[in-house]
Length: 202
Image 1: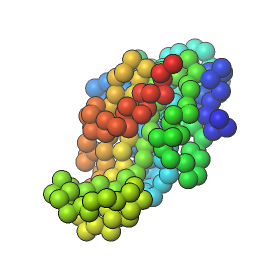
Image 2: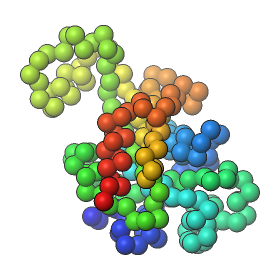
Image 3: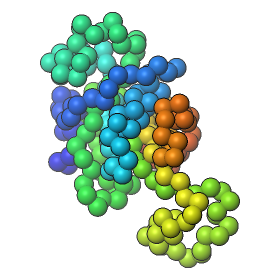
Image 4: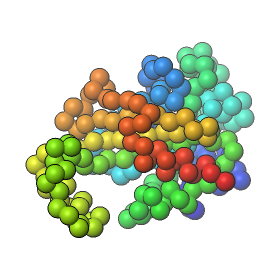
């Protein structure tokens, strides 16, 4: 895979730069999810899906000091980071035109990666619109139907999982594009969380 780190080389898990400062939140995984959401928000809407490796910040600082310094995680800033924190490291862009589920099925992470996250934009409909959905549509036809529906909502979903099965997600509506309007929870996007968890299966 040209766009993912070499499973045999932990240092290659750092293909790009880390998102910005860590928001305050209850757990390291929730902080990482909100950090990625904030990073994606800064890039604006109508963006492609983005994949992130999650690494243990302290381990990264100890084993890859040069990389940690490049990401602003050197010893001088260590006191500013929460204990047991996770550092998101953006991977190369996903292949153009690739089906997300098929792409995720090709991933194998190096041992240094303790979790992963994905941010993706989607159109969603309220439950009240399901009754008017035509039957027999294939995936492409359904996507076109949703895109034209007057009640459609544009959302950005950020989902993260750890090797031990812990998961977290954040959902932001385009029409309520504010950090105070971001909804978080472990089971908001279960299908995507399952697909990400499968990338850690042997």
